[in-house]
Image 1 (cartoon, rainbow, N blue to C red):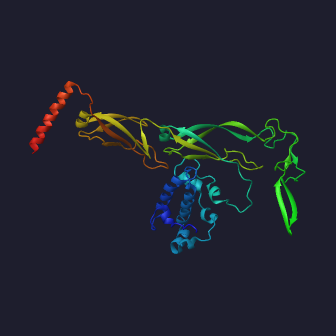
Image 2 (image 1 turned 135 degrees about the vertical axis):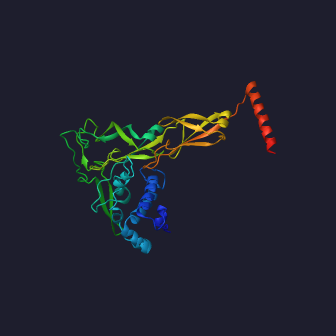
Image 3 (image 1 turned 90 degrees about the vertical axis):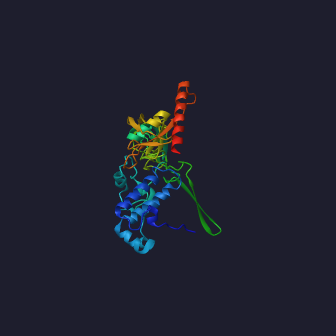
Length: 371
């Protein structure tokens, strides 16, 4: 049974009378959450496709009018090009204030080729590596360096695998196709069996003198250093896509794959992160809780002073506005929340005990007078 399609307004979580700004804001929030270059969890890509389709229809006045009038029948028959061809995903995500490639070849990768011409050779495989960044880097954003080693086309033979001046020649066994076709008849039917050519191993060409630099492989492994931009407020597990820095394509003329740098946020003993907000605990003495005091607490931008009002109860939370992390894509910065813990002396001195006894007697007198 085919899975039922969800209403586009439900997909974006907006009412049917939402204006263009509300539609874009809803798409912005969901796209940041489910974009496949950021979210590698199962189902994220399909969820993003659903979100993008809903946005493509509802952001276009003509398509939206057809959908409002007739439901899915009003937009039936539209190709992926019809739906998404007018949307510049790269520009759209740059408008969201993101410093990394969330647009790029998104249309081609998720919804197929734009043109109707023949497909080119398939690209190389993608690579993934992890990069650990500090909470300060998350707060400020900026550049980080990653190092990796990956196979690249041999510059000595330009990827042919043959010694310079001795180019490969066409395989005589398969006439350059890389395949052997064996035909026969069985039971009145003509049968063709297609196998990889054993003489050239499917390459379609034969190398007489291998390149001494790459031993005929056409590739050599080279170290590479890249600088990437960390967007302010980036979340744990975000995958930054660097086009063209994956493995080279197996076929001639095939583009290389992409590199995905998965960000891990280093633990910071000073703070606990909750979205764009930061939390920490501060312990104060009983008398400071009663009389009030001032605390100097660390922030990502240095130190800040916070007032503890008289009568502060254990577990109270003091908020420093704007001292948290930037929100991905812009918006108001998060806050720093300071939870106040009241330390009770475990082994008070004799003088302290006398004072506490005096306080208790005062409190007892106050309780009796209240009756």
